[in-house]
Image (cartoon, rainbow, N blue to C red; front, side, top):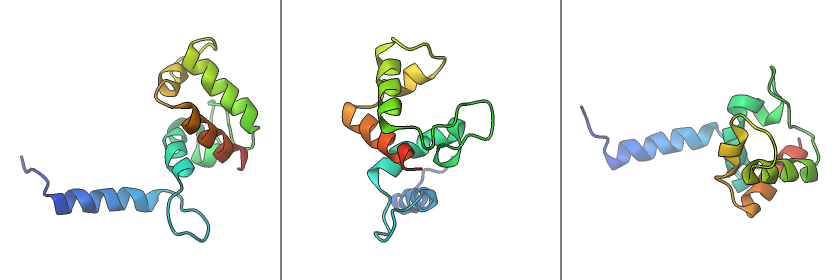
Length: 103
């Protein structure tokens, strides 16, 4: 087994970051986009779900924020969202909610 050198690890990180959506004009990934990128696996690119998982693109920021906080608190029924939401601070939830509300 080969252990990656820092140069290889840095290259891998750069490749992953290059796949994330960049903010307009800045050429950098916004913190909100980076946080929201983990949602794409289930909710689709930019929150537009292609399947049975609900789309969250264009929902109001208030709705998304409330839902995530309810999942985190365990007061909203969930299969996996309760576990995901527990990993976010209030500030991160607000960023995620604003990101998807803008789509």
